[in-house]
Every structure is written in C-alpha cells, then in structure tokens.
Length: 287
Image (tube, rainbow, N blue to C red; front, side):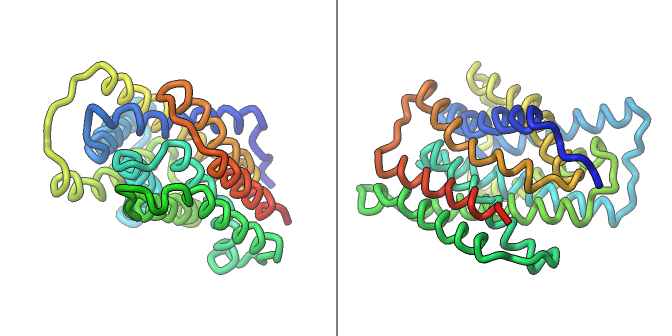
C-alpha cells in the first residue's frame, strides 16, 4: 500500500491552490479570462515537454495513452479552470468561487460508489445534503439583487464537474504515463477544449500590463507546474481522500487573500453558509 503524502506537503498544496482564485480575480481587469488560461496552459505544456525531452523521456506514448491524457487535461484543466476564471470575470466573488469548488471532495466520495464500486455511507449522503444547503445559504444574499443572474453559478457548477470527473479520469486511465509527459498532453488537452471558446467569445489582443504578466508567470510556474503536479502526485498515490481533507481550508485562505488584496468581504450570512458547507464536506469524508 502506498504511503500517504506528508501533511506538510498537503498544507503547501492548499496554500498554493488558494492563490489560483486570486490570480483569476487579479488578471480580470486587464485581460480576457479564457485567453489567459489558454496561454497559461500552452506555456506550461511547452515547459513540461522541454523538461521531458531534456531528461530523455519520449513524448511518443501511443494514440490511446495520448487520447486519455488529452481528455483528462480537457476536464481537469480546461473545463475546471476555464470555468473558474470565466465565473470570476462575470461577477462570482473570489471566496465564493473557492467555496463552490471546495465541495469537490464530497461529490468525489459520492460518485466513487458507481464509478469505483465503493460503498456510500449515510454519513456521506448527509454531508452532501449539508454542503449543498450551505452553498445555497452562501449564495442567497445574491438572489433578488440588481443585475443578478444564474450564469456565474452555472459556470461554477461546470467547473466543479470538470474537477470531479477529471480527477476520476486521471486515476482510472493515465496513472502509468511519466508525469512530465502526461502533463504535456494534458495541458494540450486544456488548450484544445478552450480554443473554440476563445475564438468565439473573446477578442484577440496583446496584453502587456505588469499585473497581467506577473499573474501569468505565477499561474504558469507556481500553479500549473507546482500545484497541479502536486495534485496529480496525490491522485497517483491513491491518497485523494486524505489529501482532499485539507481542501476545506481553501475557501478560508482565499477569503483572507481576497480581503487583503482586493478588499472583498463576505456578509455574516455568507460566512455562516461557508461554515455549513465546509462542515458538510468534512462530515461527508468520514467513514
């Protein structure tokens, strides 16, 4: 049995992962969200390919393995991150976007039944119900406000779907490929699924604002190469449940970062909803 990752590595992952939502908010005034994410994936893919070749790893892995990695990347990178960045750009508060995605572990636990043959407990069903109620409470102050639409919520739900099913696909089909080579193909998959939306929805323009460039550098080097490599490392070690138990820290960490950098605040109702959501996630992960 593979040993679980050190706790310190999990904490580092959560801290880095939380900055992804800050990057989404920080680059929004300067560039288009889907274009930003597509460029980020392209740069990260090139870096991983260069590292793989420098270490004498072949990129020729066969059409079946290549296809599996492209699909995994389309879900885990393209659908998930593309949706998060787009939702934040159209008005989803940063901390609430993080809270929405923090429910991924409970959905993963529930879906592990039909997909992996694991038994689903009553505690997990209760955790799911509590988490969904908490999300509804968190979003409730937005209902009825001027300019409110369901689009940011729908886009965030799409991102959550990509994160959950991308994780399953990664575990089931691509664990045998060298991580550097796998990341090359997976970031290519992210670019391919985003490209039609970039061309259809966003103007193509060169952005050189320092904040945008700094956000891009952080997103590529720290998030796409650092955080996602750690995430895939957890998936491959079969330690998803233990590692994801720390994911409930992401909304709180993101809230502090968003307050410090952008002055974003949450109402008491939203804070209460967040606590309820995370309580449901923690409950649902216990057997």
